[in-house]
Image 1: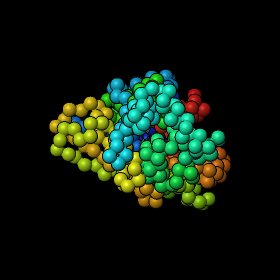
Image 2 (image 1 turned 180 degrees about the vertical axis):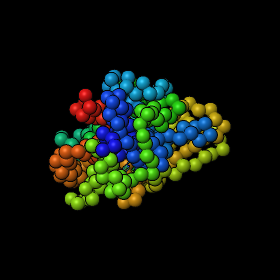
Image 3 (image 1 turned 90 degrees about the horizontal axis):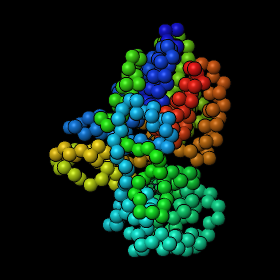
Image 4 (image 1 turned 90 degrees about the vertical axis):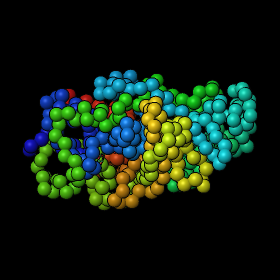
Amino acid sequence: MKYDYLVVGAGLFGAVFAYEAKKQGKTCLVIDKRNHIAGNVYTENVDGINVHRYGAHIFHTSDKEIWDYVNQFAEFNNYINSPVAVYKDELYNLPFNMNTFSKMWGIKTPKEAQEKIEEQRREAGITEPKNLEEQALSLAGRDVYEKLIKGYTEKQWGRPCTELPAFIIKRLPFRFIYDNNYFNDRYQGIAMGGYTKIVEKMLEGTEVKLNTDYFDFIKENPDIAGKTLFTGMIDEFYQFKLGHLEYRTVRFETEKLEMENYQGNAVVNYTDREVPYTRIIEHKHFEFGKQPVTIISREYSSEWKPGIEPYYPINDEKNNALFAKYRELSDQEENVIFGGRLGNYKYYDMDKVIRAALDLCEKELY
Ligand code: FAD
Ligand code: UDP
């Protein structure tokens, strides 16, 4: 055995593990099939603008330990995510807060907003929300659901809101104060200079092989390491033998524009069904950029197919049940550990991925 661990995937999960393993005197070989490190948090500098190649990444957490942990690797700026939603020719602040309600109904006070929502909630007659639609209707009423949630969610997930789990919408704050902060977390910001640098630092002193797919590599190097940490798709690891887990993928259409400021905000969501993309990201605004040009990405969401990148696990009942079966198989592995968004088939944010990786280190390394 040449290494203690073969780490498959140079994303955040794999990089945190490799960093901690190195500190404990263990050796890792990190491989990734992409031509760069950092997985989905990869950023690249184009004309002085850090472009989030795989979608906007805003770091936010309430976990002080994780906040301190990432701050070892980068300084974070004071960016606060406050997306704007465009519905036809109307414009609303997100998340759902007094600015949204005031614009929607021409009201001013929390009491008026609460009454309006209560009235719509009563009309919908939902007591125990069983799916995303019912959850949204009972939280925000019909107007907010129809204008700001239904179209966006169905584009994003490719399924009717009645077939999606309620937890997806519970990710978003819903509040009766004038506050457009998209997150409730105590800590928030963007890694200054891009996220790639964080992963670069984590992997300093560890051997990394890019453009290397695990399934080819392991055939030729079966005894390369004592154990494998696999952060790719768990169903692919088992050659899909129990069936395919479903994922959503996103196509990013990125464009450089010869103007300083295209949309006046980093994130603008398009919430009606007719506009084919879900949102437009203007990357420079994450770091308050003043460059004479700007770079924007339109995000088109679609179902995952072999050969393209999977991004979002679809944690509905059907897929969770299939994942549980793969989990039974993986629990029997002595020398393979599964981790990350794809290995654990979980809609993890960055802070949760780091937490999960550190929990694994706790069990495995110390
Ligand atoms: P990944 O980053 O996917 O890394 C897995 C790596 O494994 C990849 O590089 C892949 O190429 C490699 N790999 C897979 N299979 C193989 C194989 N067979 N052989 C070799 N290599 C392989 N989180 C936030 O906190 N805030 C946000 O604003 C946010 N926005 C997001 C927006 C989008 C569009 C997406 C998709 C995610 C977002 N996230 C956000 C979540 C964040 O991206 C993840 O939590 C994090 O990147 C997961 O890290 P990971 O290491 O588990 O997976
Ligand atoms: N959502 C919505 N309208 C919006 C933004 C989000 O209905 O304008 C819903 C949608 O279902 C989405 C979920 O809220 O999947 C969570 O949004 P978030 O921004 O957290 O999604 P992410 O892209 O970070 O996974």
